[in-house]
Amino acid sequence: MKTTLTALAYVLAVALSPAPAAAAGDACPLNLVPGASFGAVKLGDALPQFAGRAPADTDFADVAGLRVKTCGGRVADVWLDDLRLAPDCVKLDGKPLRRDITLDALKKHFGDCRDLPPRIGGAFVECAGGGVRFGYGMGTFLQVRVAPKGSDLDAECADLADDGRPVPLPAAERDALLQRVLDLDILSPYWHPDRPGRRPLRVAVAGPLAGLDAAPELTIFGEPVVFEAPAAGSGKLFEFTGIESSARRVHITFRFGAEGLQGSVRFQRRGDQWLLVEKQVAER
Image (cartoon, rainbow, N blue to C red; front, top):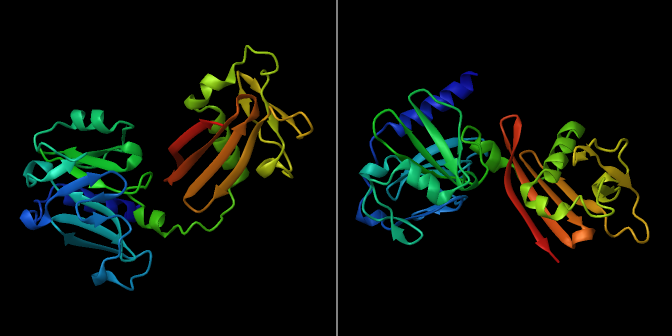
């Protein structure tokens, strides 16, 4: 609890502090690219002054008119303290971003927005899958931050330290994520439960589901799915083709033979929850 409160206190102190003095001509243009970069600062870049730092070590610096947070010497978060006091060269999609733009207008532009838990003296909303965040609250400041999509504002170093090495998912978490795949809105147009052979949904016992001690308890159309071993002529089954998990990320792939469909989803750990940060399907 003490660590969390300390982190929150720092975030809000930064949000209420004056804009860096260096935010002038030499910092321009400040192009904002959610989940990737802000001005000349790119997420994941190494800052020479923090070379040799351990992955969990956190440092802060002023770079090209922006505030930067590094983890292990690499950029994990970059922000403009107050858009209202920014230079005239902040750009979005190649066009100047008005300093008097409203928070509602920014949320409408980026979409995929969600409010983060309330904080003392201010709050944050994140949009574009978490690739951009806006801080607001006491006074009229509007902080603009760019971070990796899906990252946790209070655990960015842990996110960045995830090197992708496999970490097994507890069965309960795995099953809950598989259920969320079946519940995806982008899959709804493909189920067609009124067609012959589509209800109950038949799921292949293959790939990551093969060899499990017990089949996941999954439902759709208000009823349990039916698991079947792949056999000749069973190419119309729904199949989870892969589950890759690391300390902070999960990637699940699937296909649905009856619709010639394949897709994938990505989840990012957010506290003790898994946040859906990417979903896609394509017809073959």
